[in-house]
Image (cartoon, rainbow over all chains, first blue to last red; front, top):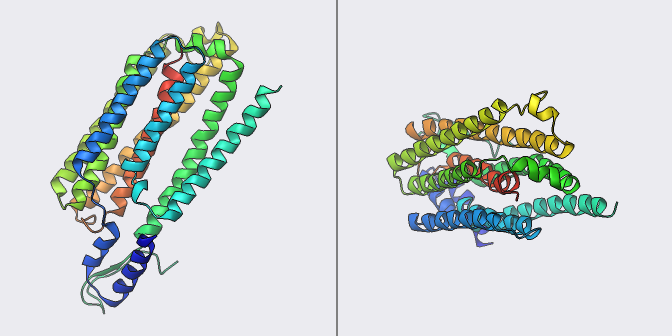
Length: 116
Length: 214
């Protein structure tokens, strides 16, 4: 929320001054290279887990585990690489709404398929 | 709309170059576009889910021929390319132009490596007679045919996105080398990154769904 006011101030300063430096305030989040490497290591490890689990015969659990791991990987990519962590609340809400719509399609389709 | 559009006054009445822009709006537009991509692929994933539910056995038989090793290698390649895009943005924020460009070159190499693997995979399957009207496909059950139909459409559409992502990154690299993208003005780079990460995320789901059915 504080970011929104920051952007507001930013717009005000931009209107008054012609200096380009103020733009930097909008991109105040520099993430360390190390953090990105750790996220990547986590993603590679999760891929190894997915492949290993698929080799074990778990029956119907195989698909569920694979999808859960894929969801965790997606969250890691989205949160850290796509910078959702630092995004305004409005973008987070948009993403959430989109995911809810997407899940609704799945639930509706499979509730139909399962009871035929 | 004019208020938010990018307007440049170079040496006119303003004297110093002043750029009015709306990075937040640009980012939001990119996300809205990514939502349409999510629903495009989401529809295909839904189709996959529904058919797999109906033809579970056929899907398993068809997927047995998949080379999960190449699939895993391609997954690692795309994950690494996502890392290099993220690193290039971090480098740009620190005004390390050369490092940022180097990371994007590495991303492009990864993307090309991914496509080369895909080429060999598809050639192998086509060689085995798995293509529309192909000899192998005619003897297959409905489930297997549907599996391969979805396989070609979904990995093909994904491959197309990899190519578009590479072009997008190529443009961004030109912008960086001409100093149109700087440490304080890098939303274009950020948007290219968002697109590339989406392509990565789609593959994260495609890999277990097409390669790891046992």
